[in-house]
Image 1 (cartoon, rainbow, N blue to C red):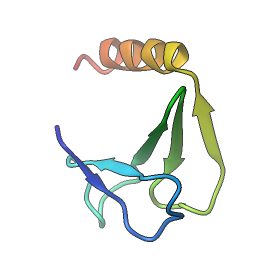
Image 2: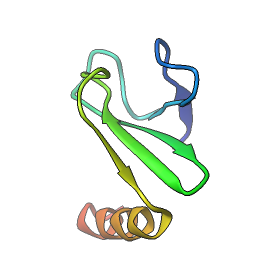
Image 3: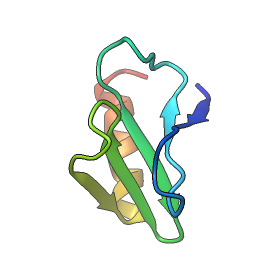
Length: 71
C-alpha cells in the first residue's frame, strides 16, 4: 500500500488516502498526522466530521483492524 496526498484541503493538515482507494469506488478514510495526533476523515465527505487519536490509540486501532480484516 502507498499513500497519496488529497487535494483541496486546509494547508495545516496534509491528508493521505490509500492507493487502494479510487475516486469512483466506495468511501475510504483519509489520514493526516501531526506531532502527537492522527486525524481521520471520510474521503467522500471531507468537510464532515473528523476524529483525532493519540499515537497509542491509533496503533491499537490499526493492530485490531489488521487482525479483524486478516491483513
